[in-house]
Amino acid sequence: MEIRLRPELEALIKQDVQRGPYRTVDEFVERAVAMLHEQEAWLAEHRGEVETQIGEGYAAARRGELIEAEDVRSRLNERKRTRLGNQPRG
Image (tube, rainbow, N blue to C red):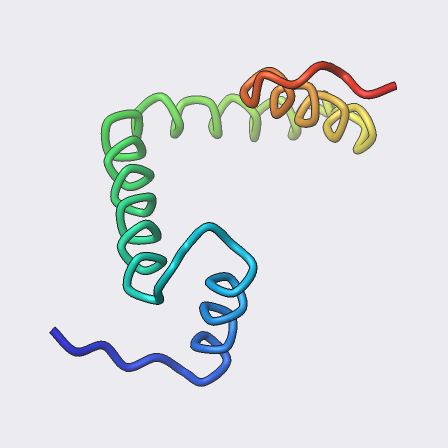
């Protein structure tokens, strides 16, 4: 299989290979494809749940039940720390 990429994408991949744990462009692309496949599979499996949550969020927003941006950032950062197993930085 031959894949043609825009020059700016090639440059990004080369940067990631140079600074990351990947030894070759092929290794980087294999990992990227695997990650995308996992993401797409998860989304397909949870599509109904995601659509329900989006609908609930949209309905809440229409009712004026909004969350401040800083609260959202804080919640997302906490989830990220939990997922990565890191302790909160203080």
